Image (cartoon, rainbow, N blue to C red; front, side, top):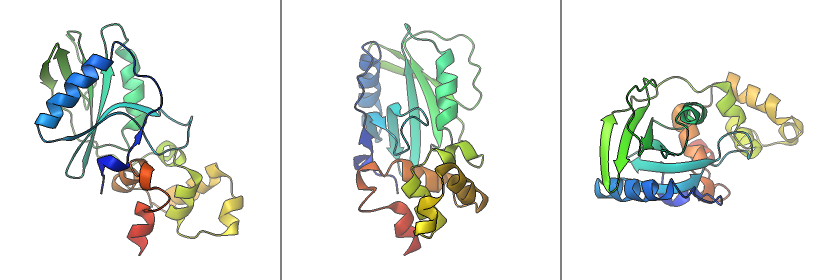
Length: 199
């Protein structure tokens, strides 16, 4: 189960033009009953993927990602950032303070933020494709070993890429499993979601 208190907080500085938008969105979604995690980091191998997440929303076991782009930033970058994270979340949105006329991301939702007003322009579609190898390969080596199901010296000696291939071919990484792993940061060492499932 995805729990907000387990997610790492990002150590990077929030962009000064995005900060106000993130604050407005956080307040808006909290009032709607979502758990909000602004400016967070996923529990993945550093440098493999976008590590900073502008805003995560949790409701039930649904994980929603919001990428914030101010009018001073390029919306074009959002498509690449979202593509890298789609295997870990259920829905994704771009939130911006600019007026967008043509929206070309069919599965990704669009939110307009102006001052304190938040308007849903386009509802996101739920991601349903099987996770890609790329997403499995971004997991930390200790997570891959736990997923493979045998913590032994042989696996410690296998390079991470080969280990990811073994895990991927065994079909151990569903979207639900990935979502739990990348949000278990604070409890990774003491309360691993992989090890709980195997008990």
